[in-house]
Each structure stands twice: as structure tokens, then as C-alpha cells.
Image 1 (cartoon, rainbow over the protein chains, first blue to last red):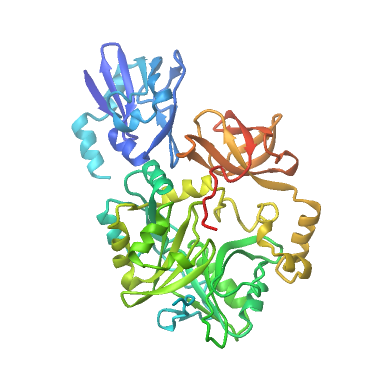
Image 2 (tube, one colour):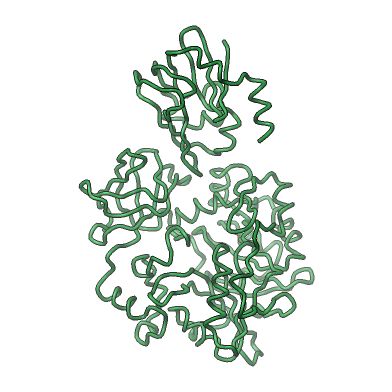
Length: 123
Length: 394
């Protein structure tokens, strides 16, 4: 499974035809206590860079953008009762949605994990 | 022995009438406790011209700690002013709608700095700190940090020359808030809490410094505000935070606590475009002042009191978990009838709450409304303020 990252602090993990998307641990730390996650509808068509989800923290609401184009194949239902999973496990159990990709070449423009960690160190 | 806060000349600078409002520093200033906050893991953000601690452990944990124990807030960005001279009460009454003449030594009042049209320039706390043997009265005034330079300019311009207005810029301000605040303060400055009820002030000598102590705050809990010289603030913060019931609390929790307590925040719920009657702050317009007038905007404010305001500040409880923020539209039957001025998730109630202004006809509790949160209509109902009951020590 290969994982890519965006400068907006989303991650996308590729497993065959399916990809899982979330926000990074760095992002959740910046947002603080997360109280609500608005997720896309299954079947929704997403363009690369579209605002797809909203993560609400005590401080503010933040948009989450789709790292690539595709179609939503599922959402993390556990977040409706436990939005704090995004705080405690941002890059694992706190994933937001799954999608099928429409253009895998869009992944080429994203960062790999070492590049993302280096990017975060510059912030 | 007790005496009221003493006016202390050595740490207050008289304000030059010509340039108070132009004296605001250009970049963010550092609080006297800046390094102390950073050493405790605070995340610092620019606010009101200062680098301020927004959180340490996390807003929800800090919020709930304050409701259960005691939180220490650094509010040194706020403006601490001293107004002295014969006729100071009457001079302040020309700027505020409160009955300052009737305010006894050691008593605190919430009041409003008003513009000529009755708009709110700032909200503030005034304490009569006249010492027992003094020949002239002294009032300690705390104003908001973001507005303090404009406030000083306005006050200096409108106060008579015989009245001295001093900026106590070598003093820090700490707020100790929560149900265990009194027991904590008693361990550090013994005896002061016993002589104070809500909205009363006193002072104490502590390690050679004069500390002003007011039983007030901005969380809805029992608590104290402590005015302390910069030179002693770190010692005092250390002494309080060494107690197991006290933790430092950031601005983030301060905001969620005051929202639950239904307390307005200047620059958000209150502004120059807001009058005290719409803002549901009629209690700040004293009975005698209503009868006699003589405060800025008297005609407009008395008319609004008589006829009722066109719009009113209300509390709103939202369905679901999505929070509505400042600026969101409030609707009724599809028509925009108001706007959210503060909103967020309530850690105590575990649901989103908000304050906003709505048409007065739709301000009654249990009125069903909708809030437009980024295009999504969220159901909300008007609820009485505060959201979480006040627990002041009366």
C-alpha cells in the first residue's frame, strides 16, 4: 500500500483500485479537539482539489480537499459517534472516506511520506 | 486588616492627551509571562496585539478542568487603567451608563463605554478603589485588550483635565476561575477570599508587591482577577500552578467558557453598531441613570428601552453536532432574520451552541429557527442565557 500526501495535509493510501483519504496527524494537532466531521455522500463524484469534507474543531471549521479525482465508495461511519478518532488516530482509524480513482496519474503530483515529513518540518 | 486596591503611582503612567490612541505598538507584544507559557507547552497565537496562549493540553480538557477545579488565565493583554481626582465618578458617568456615584469602595460594576449614538465602544469593569483615608476618589477600570488604545484616547479626550487617567502598563492580570479557585487562592494569599463576594474587590501585600483582587471573571464560575506587578507575576503564577487544583488555561477555553456562560465578547457580540438594549445589557443602565440621563446616547437608549429593541441578542441551541460560527445567517421560514455573532461546540453540554442577534419578534425562548452553515440549514431553537448556570459566590 502506497501513501501520498498533499500540502493541505491530507493523506491518501492506495490499495489496488481503492484509495482511503484522511487528514494527517500534523493537521489534527493544529486543529485541536475535533467535535464533528461532515463526510461526503457515497457515490459522489469528486474533482481533484474539491472541498469534500469539513472537520469541525472547538476552534474552527476546516475544509478537507480531495487529493485526486474519483468517486466516493464509502465513508468512515465511526466518526459520527466518535469524531475524536481523527485526533487519536488521524492516519489510521480516523480516516474520512474511501474512493475509486478516475486518473491515477494525478498521484504523481503528490508528496511521498519522507517529502511530506520534511515539508512539515519547514512549517 | 483590609483595604481596597491602592492607587500605586509607581507603576502607572499618566496618559498624554494628545497621542494615547496613536501609542499602540506596531507588532505583536510579548506578555510578561511569555516564556512561562511556552515552557508549559502553550501554543501561542497573535491576539489583541499580543502573542497569547491559545491552548496547553487541549481546549476541551482545559475547559472541563476549569468547570471542575480551577484554571489560571493570563489576561495581561487587557487594559488596566486608573481614574482619579475630585469628581471622578461624575466624570466617568459622562461616558458610561452605570451609577458610579453609588459604587462603594471595594465594589465592582460591569459597564459600557458608549458612543454619542448609544453604540458600544467597549465593555469594562470598574472598581471603586478609593482608600479609606483618601482625599479624592480612585476607580480601577479594566477594558478589553484589542480596544484599550482607542478607549484611552476616547477617555482622555472626554474626561476633564482635572481627572487623571493612568495606564497601569507595568501590571499583569491573571484570572483564577472555577469551583476550587477560592480554596486555591486561600493557600497562596490567605484571608482575602473570606472578605469578598461576587463583584467585590480588595488588595493584599504579597511578597512585597501590592496585588489587587477582584471576585469576578469571564467563565460563569466563582473566581478572582488578580492585578499584579510584572515583576511578581511569574512568582504568583508559579505559586498558584504548584497547587494540584490549578492548571494554566488558554484563550480557546476562555472563549468556550464565556460562551456557555452567555457572556458577550466585544468585537464579536458587541460593537459600535450595537446598542446596550439590543445586546440585552439593560442591567448595565442603572435606574438612577435611566431617570436622569446624561450618558452618551441617552435619547436613543431610553427610546429603545421604552419601545423595545428591533433586534435582540439570544442564545441558540443547535441540532446535531455541526457548529455555527460568527457571520452565519439565521433564518425563519426561509427569510434572513438575524446573524450569529459567537458560536462553537460546548464542551460541557457536548453540543453546538451560539449567540446571535435576531428580530425581537423571534427572540422568545423555544422559537424554532434555522442557521445557514456553509449552505446547510441547521435547525436551532432560542434558549435562555446562560447555557450553563452561573455559579458566582454571592
